Amino acid sequence: MLNTPQKQYYSIREVSEMLDVSLPTLRYWEQEITQLQPKTNGHQTRFYSAEDIELIRRIKYLRQEQHLSVRAIKKQLDTDRQGVDRRQRIADYLKKIKAELVDIRAMM
Image 1 (tube, helix red, strand yellow):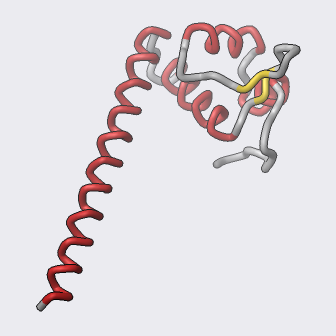
Image 2 (cartoon, rainbow, N blue to C red):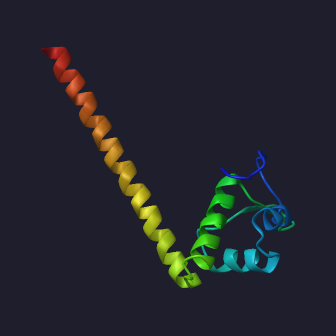
Image 3 (spheres, rainbow, N blue to C red):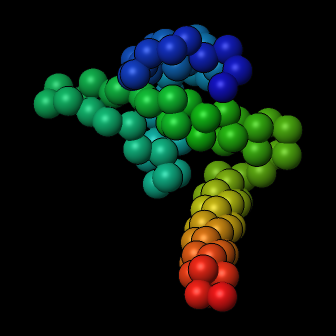
C-alpha cells in the first residue's frame, strides 16, 4: 500500500487529504458505487479501512486516468471482483488436486 499510514480506520477527512479527493466526491462515490461501503457509527461518522482506501484509489484511477463514468466504474469493479472470485476458485481447485496427488503418491 503506497503512502497509506498504518492505522486500522481513517476518517473521511484523512482519506480526502491522503488521496486528494474532495469530501463531496467521496460521499457521492459512496452513494453511487455500492462496492464502496465504509463502516459508520451511530452518528453516521465514516470509518475507512485500508481496503476502502485501495478501492478509492482504483475508483480515482478509473475516473481520472481512464475517463470512465461512474456507471462504467461500477461495471469495471464488478468485473474485477468476478475475476478475483474466479482466480480464487481455480486456486482452491488446484490445491484440491495437489492434495489428491499427494495422497496418490503416498499410496505408491
